[in-house]
Amino acid sequence: MTASGSPALGSTPRVPPAPAPSIEFEAVSFAYPDGTRALADVSLRIEPGESVAIVGQNGSGKSTLVRHLNGLLRPGSGRVQLDGVDVRPVHVAHLAAWVGLAFQNPDRQLFAGHVSAEVEFGPRNLGIRGAELTERVALALAAVGLDGVAGANPYDLGYSRRKLLALASVLAMRTPVLILDEPTTGQDARGVARVQDVVARAAAEGRTVIAISHDMRFVAECFRRVVVMRAGRVALDGPPSAVFAEAAWPELRAAYLEPPLPAVAGARLGLGATPTGSAFVAALAAGPRNR
Amino acid sequence: MAIELSAVRYRYAGASVFALRSIDLRLEPGRVVGVAGANEAGKSTVCLVASGLAPGVVGGLLEGSVRIDGVETATLRPHELAQRCGLLFQNAATQLSNTTATVFEEVGFGPCNLGLPVAEVMERVWWALRAVGIEKLAPRDPARLSGGEGQLVALASVLALRPKYLILDEPTSELDPAGTSLVADALGRVARETGAGILLVEHKTDVLAKIADEVVVLERGAVALAGAAAPTLADPRLAELGVEPPAAVRLERMVRAAGIEWSAALAEAIE
Image: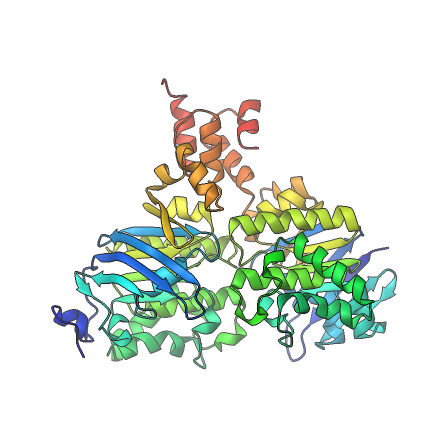
């Protein structure tokens, strides 16, 4: 019924737990029923409050990995721990208070008749009622810029706004761990800026943010740590300055990824590691390095 | 010879506002015309109207003129439209027929319906699978593909029809960077080698910078910017139209904004 060792993790708390738990994957392997081996011996530790981007080719195991954190998938072998507690026996409903996951495809997630009911659903299930519920819904909708359409039917919104709505419904749960599966796909420039803002704010609040993304600019600008997956394994793991540095390019390309343009331009000009536009400009302003 | 939209206004059935307010656009064979714009600016609606699916199949009210090789789309039947113009929907899953057991048969579904000889169907299927780099998926079940794989299969199915005009609504939205550049290269080749005209809706302006001849930027149902790809993608109004400029344009702008002198060496480094 409840996880041994941590009463907080084993019971659905009235108030979401804080601060963020540590996350530990220990030699986790997973194969789907059709035999596809999605994770092969993955070990990874994420400290409370870290912001981590997971990148890699389609089918490299990114989504499979994060689905182990909210109990949608259970490891074939190995262990997943939150705050030192094995999550295997913990029910999905309990994990939901800890780990919020916004799906890649919002249509797998949305079901309510109008926008604010959709956003209410998560926190209501955590036992939130009354003024706090109202406030959470309002803040979550404002965070993604949907405060003007609270009464609309979710399916009257275009794809990009449905995706922001799915994000808002996860935000309203205020889970200490926030997982976003390809949050910027289908977003225009303003949508991407909103998602960047959501990530920055969650990180500033001390929450752990994990995002899967193919958008290397978003990754380099918004995350302190980048994990590169390749064929179910962790191929690279470090800050953007290391993962996108020239020395890592062969490994990056083996994972079918390209470093962001500022990193490439910085290397060509001998400026060192410049994973973002601002790092590139700063290095340029400081002049070529004497090495 | 072209798809031509002149002074087009279009309103969906039951809607109170026009989704398209003022669209002029021309797609010639062998050319790639990129369409960019903020979410809900009318990009997908332009695809439906240019292919004749709106109002022909989805209903609604069309004003102005939409012609394919000089013939008003309103006078063409759905199968006549389908023979001239291939359309790839934004959501690839809605495109697959759900009637076939393998990817090979799925891609062959359209050519078979054109009544082509078996040998030509086979040849077209392999050509289309190779064009988007998914020969290996040929024996797989189309219902059990990842989002990115499904999108490539849907694209191959449209390519196999060898239409004179291709209208593609965000064909790379679910692809990883490697898949995106593969599709971009494939589309550039299809335009050059088969002479197809391609209308390409794409948020990734780096893809447009690579293969588009012209770019049209929409804003609330009207054309806000249009012209040759390079200058249009470098237009300073792009950001306020909700479109992220290509990486090279953005980086150049950041360098100049920092007061650093722009040089040939810098231009070469961000090439």
